[in-house]
Image (cartoon, rainbow, N blue to C red; front, side, top):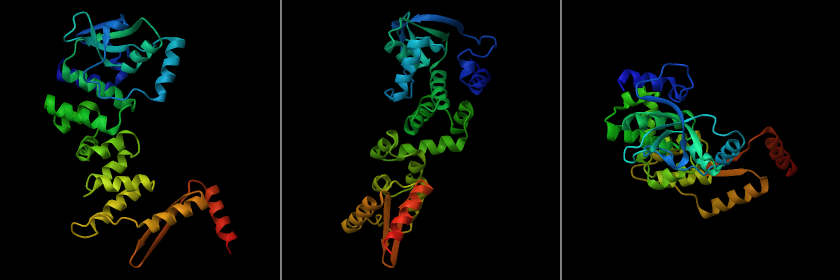
Length: 287
């Protein structure tokens, strides 16, 4: 496929790639057909690693009721004659298996490895199925294996260069922090704040324990940088942590204490005006 054709296809999004738009087939397209489940194999370039979410059950129920409504995108398998490799739609193929279907609708394209990885990334990014770490590894693979620059990669995927660069920076975090990001304990915003930290693992644990917002996490990292040469962030004493737990139990809300040489702050986190009213009632009752 020529470079302009590839870019136009990716720019139009999945509807064009999967044949939903009424446009002439691209070179190498073989149209829609039905393939046996056992003819189809997961793609080597699938960036998503976890398919065991709750949404899979919903998809399986839908497939049982209505079948697979949108064809999957495949290419001839590079090492298994007569078989096909999934480029986009692996969740639908897995759901069809769980629904005990014997066939799935598919569109076959003759595409190279680079296009296969790009399409797999586009599908998951557009559907927000990837964790930030899975997304970062996908970008890194395109850069390392197919010699993309960050600018070219951003253009091909319809993203800003800053998004690609900031996502790639997450791979510099310790494995333990990447795991926290992958399982949802940290958001991408939290992780981006930790990239410049001297001790990202310690701060990540503190952010999770105190349920900090992204802005609070950014402030924590700034405090670390301004705390002196080589000094690690101050850890709370057992007495301070005990007081936080006691106040949290009493108020039913998250409480954080930041204590220093010249005093400190007491922070009570509430999520609604009703919770704020409850706090005020409890404080007034102590008068």
